[in-house]
Length: 605
Image (tube, rainbow, N blue to C red; front, top):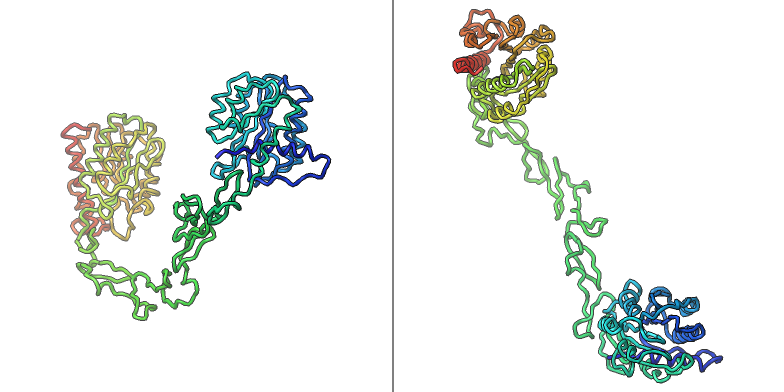
């Protein structure tokens, strides 16, 4: 279907000119168009001739039904370059367009017609510049008016423009090249190519297009079959649907648009489609939030009429009552009664089960300890202690010997039953300052501790042993860092390893350590001072310290340790330990002596 609006445009001009000074005639009623005038303003167009072209455009526009939803008009002029006078989206009244056309200043240069067609296709007829989208089926019409031969190629670019849906009318005046006009225009050429002998005659050739432009309303003349509405265009029509509906493939009937179908609605529960839009709806028991998409369960408990003795729990269907741990919901669904778990479960306690709210725990007879399983009892705690080793990291130790110290520490760890309820181990290194490598509650297995020991970095500075003892008493054996309460009768052991004289006083904090219940062992090597070692060690001193330049006397850590520390088997000189604590200390000392003896025999240290 070919549209021939230009001829009708020109006819309107003629009609308007012949009608002057009579009152303006009724405007020609056509469907909406997107029309762009492409005007040659090269130097060959003389000023009075350009005024005729200016009048030509104004008269055509004056007989159009212009507006944002009717016909839109744009104007560009060209010579050696292209200039946009106004685009399809700039003006929507004839008065504004006329003022803009009267303000045009001709470029007066070359004749680059191909460049102007390229601009019309790439810029003037884009949606961004005001052209209606292709699916609207609004005809796009370019009217090229020129008086000479193009100085660039037009055939190829004109073909691209026609393929892009632009209908081109080529109007040549006076010196125009007919071959170039035919190369630019849309087919059929006899309806799209015009050659006018002079500018004075340009207004007369429009008469023959009157019937084509001002044709009948095709929607009125034909049985269009459109379900919703029919839109008339010159010599044809097309169907449109109401908002919220889309045109079916038959081009006539309409179907509601399912706005929920693409899945982008964001509704948390249900999407309800209505006439091209949608709304979100929540399931029963929920209300729609302010974002109109997400849902929140209705808090029935907040209404205050649930009568639950303990806790109220909202559910989509209403609410239910729930009891706190250790209680059972009664048949009325509201009140709660405490549960005696010792009578209701197989607690497995060896001696006695004690109920508490929602739980139970096992206890042992006085003098016995609860195993790590929390159920069985044993006379003693299998040698469980809280052990903190304080390691000298001063520069006199030297890196190679520090690695041997790490091995010594790990040999001790290998013989311990490390666990949260068994033996706990902490490690402190000191030089000019003190650093906790890991506290008593850091690691729960021997492998973890040994790995951390081997990663320990050598500090290599001074020897502040007194500062290290202070840190051990105030921090390392605190419950915050994992020491068990004194009431649990778990022995606290501090083992200090040093190779030289302390650079600060040790007496005060060594005494405080022993007064606080810590059993202190002192191991010295090399330039360690025996007097300082004895000040650190617990009573009896001979059983709690060792010194040797080559570790040959390390194995002499008192064989009668148990006799001196355990009152029920000793001479009654010391009254400090329970039987279980006594066994734990004896086991630790025995293990330590064995390690020192092994290291001495192998010349490791």
